[in-house]
Image (cartoon, rainbow, N blue to C red):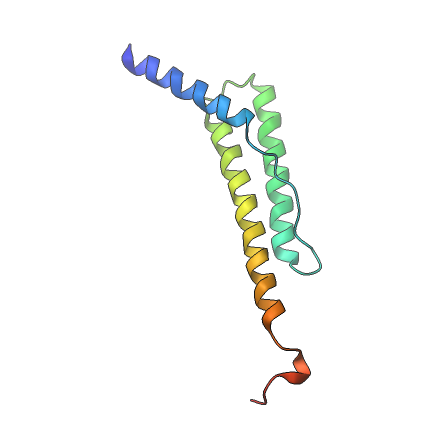
Length: 102
């Protein structure tokens, strides 16, 4: 009984959390970081498919789909941060003609 109550509470918490999950979107310049932008695009597609699955299954997926959406949203943000770091490193490099000879 206690385990069932705990599991039900966990599912409800996960569903509530999923409602506040920001929808990922592509915000990386595909000309500057094509692979990172493509990865973000795949995350957006995966997030949407999980949403479709939730609707098709009347949100009866045990909270796992909601958790997957949370992780996809976090992965999307991490990719954005990776692009930001790469931008900083690229901006700090001297132009090609001003680099010291090797």
